[in-house]
Figure 1 (cartoon, rainbow, N blue to C red):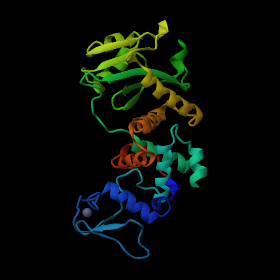
Figure 2 (figure 1 turned 180 degrees about the horizontal axis):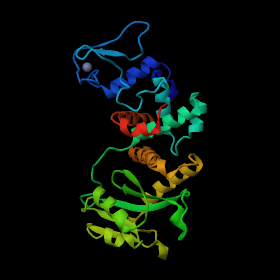
Figure 3 (figure 1 turned 120 degrees about the vertical axis):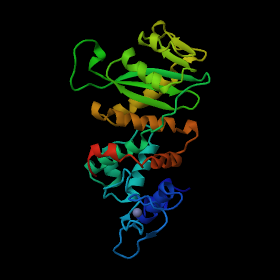
Figure 4 (figure 1 turned 180 degrees about the vertical axis):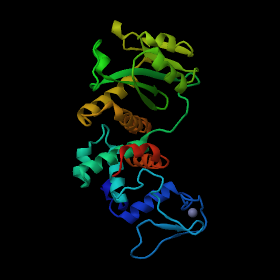
Amino acid sequence: MVSALSAPHFHNEEAAYEYVEARIWPQGPVCPHCGGVERISKMQGKSTRIGAYKCYQCRKPFTVKIGTIFEASHVPMNIWLQAMYLIAGSKKGISSNQLHRTLGVTLKTAWFMSHRIREAMASSSDRIMGGNGGEVEADETFLGNKKEAKVGASYHHKMKVFSLVERRTGVARSFVIDKVNAAEIGPIVARNVSTETRLMTDEASHYLSIGKPFLTHEVVKHGLGEYVRGERHTNTVEGFFSIFKRGMRGIYQHCSEKHLHRYLSEFDFRYTNRAACGVNDKDRADIALAGIVGKRLTYQTTGKA
Ligand SMILES: [Zn+2]
């Protein structure tokens, strides 16, 4: 038996750099300053930082961290890879407190690392879901309490999440919404789902107008105790919500609305790349690693680790 965590890139910082470089620079190092690929050499010598290269085109040094979620972080690369593996491999997520205890980093660092890893997991796909008569399920759910509690209907003080799940691929896409109505949900559906789709929703009235442009709009009447009628159901998206809510209740107990979209990225990512879709823990961590590039602007909002 070999533990997944015994791989060298989890223990040796040089091996960790090589592991990341092989995935970010499959054709060899690329200078992040000038884009050069030719006159680059690895810096040698005892005082040299691990993973340092020099570009002789622009004469600047660099590492693979530049332009990624790892930039400006002092956490050793192998610890980053451990954190990514743990978050990618835990079905309901892993708390900052747990990361802090397991990795031996401070709680504050663990919190920043978690948020940066969520940035890496955030989908940059603009692929349209559904099409060719495929099924997409749409539903919303409520979570916790908003700080600025409003009076009125019982869900007004809750945070609201709208999700789409494409049945064929198992891809989940989730959105924080302010109000549960056609004005807010309609544009999200229109932007993300092909009209050549069988749209599956419950009987909520806001879906009446939203469903009109689609090949079919199939409605399951939960109010009448109906949950499945052949292919007409929303069980897939409800299954996604159940994992998300168990994770948010059990692992991430305190989440402000400001950060909710980050947690949604994490749950969308794991669900989309789950074992039932043929993705094992190692592959899932590697897919997250492929997403570390080009996320600088958003991660800067979470400060420095
Ligand atoms: Zn250069």
